[in-house]
Image (cartoon, rainbow, N blue to C red; front, side, top):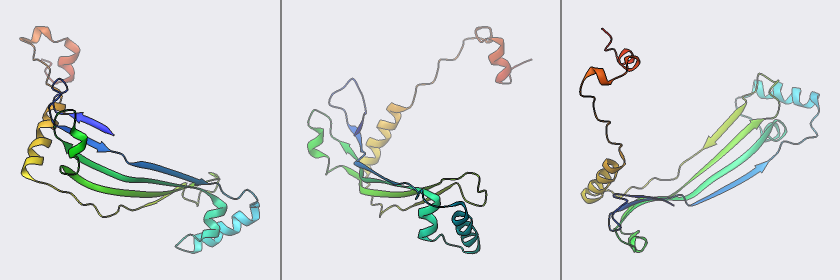
Amino acid sequence: CIVIPENPTDPKSSVLVLDLGTLLLKSRLATGGATKEKIQSLVATANSQKDLTEDYRMSLYDCFSVELADLSLFLGEGGPNWRQNNKRMMILDPLSIPLRLDNAISPALVSLPSINANGKISEVKMIVSALRVRRLLKISEALSAPSAPKAASGLDVPRSSRQLSGKNK
């Protein structure tokens, strides 16, 4: 979880919580027994077809399957018990993001895409209300960095800074 308080010095301030859920990573390396002739044959076949066959993918790509499951976002009430009220202040219902990455094993084959990515996001369901929007705005205002104080005169600003900002006369 990533917890962002509205006011870090006030233990009773609202908190924005990003629950990263779980990360699942699987890998399958390309079959090492493919000969150069077989690889060239697969590349020629793949160039004539729009979609990659599974045989082609298994022989020429290392495949990685990444899934971020149960990702959610909610606002918590202030105080030490903010975890108990998290379902009431849900902003983003838990969702999963599966992603498949294929990495070419031979960069010398220029006709191959070096990386193929395929993914989808499940249904995104957001629960928004005026109260939640106000709290989100307060937290975003607290996160934004205060602007630097302006110099009283141009003499306080180094010459190189004035040149970069276009104030060079």
